[in-house]
Length: 315
Image (cartoon, rainbow, N blue to C red; front, side, top):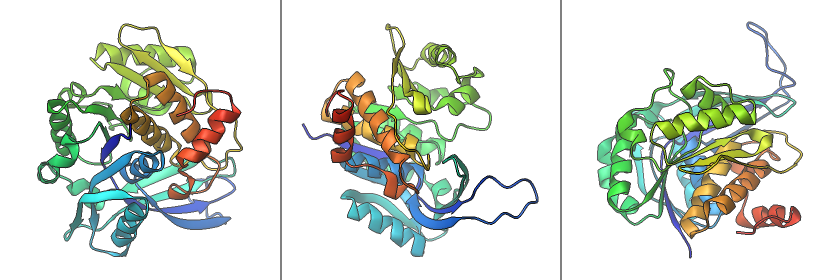
């Protein structure tokens, strides 16, 4: 089965600076490298889904500018349906300023611009893409109303809804109207802590946070734990930790997006949750081995090689 995934979310041009460390307040520090890459959580997850073998479509906005054209070209080169993409004449394409230190840790500031203008009419205009999908994948770099509209449409058509709550809202609150439509939520440790108040640095803490999401009505919670893998809690079952993979990490940018896109693709293919989480962990690990978002997102062939080398499941 070849699954269909539709992503509703953000697109941006990532301006990535490499530095030996993060500069202190008021300090000027010489960097060691610079690059511009197609990014935005929606874009990254769409690329990850398509490279993981799913038929993928993207719903979002870019500006009428050079960055917007480059993002659309990247989508098309990765065989992603862009019928749901709108060129916004009033807002510039989104931007992300990213600094990566010598240990591969990243610090990101996003400027939404056209992403903030995504609206319910954009969802209505592209409703057929959602109606025909197996999985709807969303993030929080766009406003809540179009996400709610997309999730409602997905629920009406039996489409599985995955919400990656990134970045977590400043107040930690996601509208109940949206959460009530979500089948799977995929926060990382920081986002889970922000939304539940529970420290998720330990597996035990992540288990406690996952139970909070369950109490809020989420059927399945997956908290990504970086090099520790992922913690999965399904309704009525015990929490289970899925290990990650040892790799030579140099840049963690888009690792979470790689996980989410590969997870969505695997579930759309009809694979069970446990195998899909393993595939997501493999994709996330591989994404840390290259600099930048778009270049680091692995193909299904690369994921299969890593899984085979670790004697786990194969997609």
